Image (cartoon, rainbow, N blue to C red):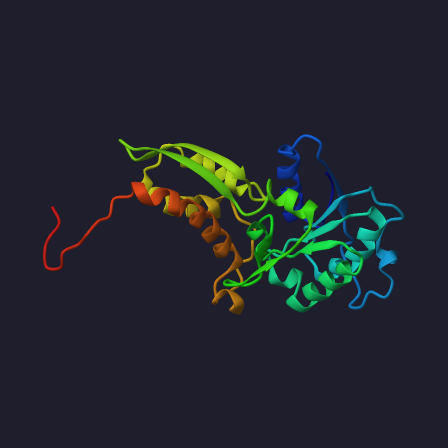
Length: 254
C-alpha cells in the first residue's frame, strides 16, 4: 500500500514516525507538509498544492486546520487515492458539517472516506463520531490500514497463580504508537491494577488528542475518550482474574 500523509506540525510527524517504524512489508509512506496559512475561503485549491504529488492508494490527513479538508478532493485526484482518513483529534480540525461535505465530495469521485473522532476509534469497518455513535464505511484500503493502525487491540496473557500479566501482544496499534507503549508497561502488573494503570500510561505517553470538553462526548474530552477505548479493550480480558473486594458497613478492615 502506498500512503501519502499530510502534516502541518509535530502532531502529524509523530504519527508518521510510528507508521514508518512499523510498516508492514510492501507498504510505503511519503509526507507532504501543508501550507501554514489559508484564506477564509479557498476559491482555487490548486493554488495551495504542489505541481505534483506522489501516487498513493491512501491519504492520511494529520493537518491541524480545517482548510486542508477543502484540498483533499483535489489531492485524491492528483494521487489516484482510493481512500482518505482525516484524523479528528481536535473538533476544530474538521467540524461535523464540513466532514459530511467532504465525505460527499469524495463519494462522487468513488473515493472512500473516514473521519474518526478520535483517530484511535478507527476500526476496519467503522469509527466514532460521538460518544455513543459510530459511522460505518466501505473502503478496502482504509480497512487494510485500520487492521494495523487504528482502535487499539492488545491481547494479554495472565498467570493464573500470581494473577500478573505475562504477555501483551499488540494486534492493532494506535496510529500514534500509544498502544505499543502501554503494552510494554503492562508486563508484570497484577490484574487488579492493570486497567487503571493503562489509563495513566496512555495519558503519560502523552496522548495528543484535545482536552477541550465536547457536548457530543457528554462534556468529556477526546483525550479521555481515547484512554477509555484502550481500557475497554483490556477490561474484559482482565475481569476473570480480578479479586472483588467487599466492604461490610459498620466494620473495620483488618
